[in-house]
Length: 334
Image 1: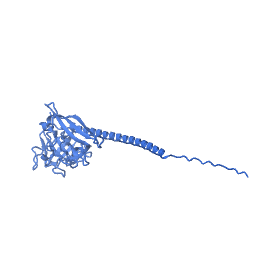
Image 2: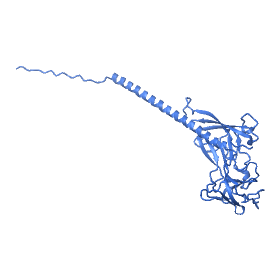
Image 3: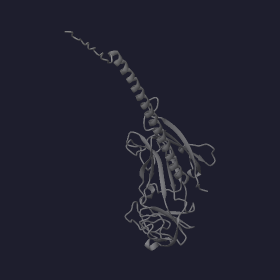
């Protein structure tokens, strides 16, 4: 018998050696590392661009709002130099006590009544400047008639913009008077009331608006038709702590219907503010301490030091910039 034998060939098993696996892992790690580096670089570039954009936006906002207030300093719907009866309670101890200076600066450690130095939120940072601005705006509302005995003034329009609690000034060609509105409904009627007290702060010591001011008995004065009335406007700008470990630019102003100023955060990351003033008769910008007549100020130069929110600098610190802006005053005592 012949037996046929079949040889079954053993197939060769293919695979990766340990060295090949190690080389593949190294190459994979190199590709992954490059991808991570590119992602990290792009993320850092985006973060830097975002921070710089926020810094520029803070600077733009700060300068626009400050410049708006400064340009209007001294704006007055009434003629300057008129004898003025101020019938507000505690007028000598508050921002509404003196309207003779439309603008006033405070250097570094010089305090002003609006806000105290301190480290709490909305407290002023020491060694930074502040500025206080007062105006009534350039436009007023015309008076149709006034009744001193009832403390009632009729205006020529219901859209007068004066609310209960607002401080206002009324004037004709002989005198002016500063008082607080105790009752008004803008957009609804033309009535305006200025009673003594009236449930508002600080309130009027008398409803009589004549001179000399006598809170006990009052001196009546009848402002006739075509007299002018306007809302008093006062703001202050300062650098304060923001309660988040940084500093911000703040605006201090009374809200509508109130005489009590409130500090509002305007721009984050503003670390310092230095202000100098140009006055008639001197070609140089000077610090507030060198100004003797604030009515002679014609321009204000504001220098801000701003910083990015995050530490994006090559030294591991926030990027800081120093920017300046000059604002000319539209209104001056002539």
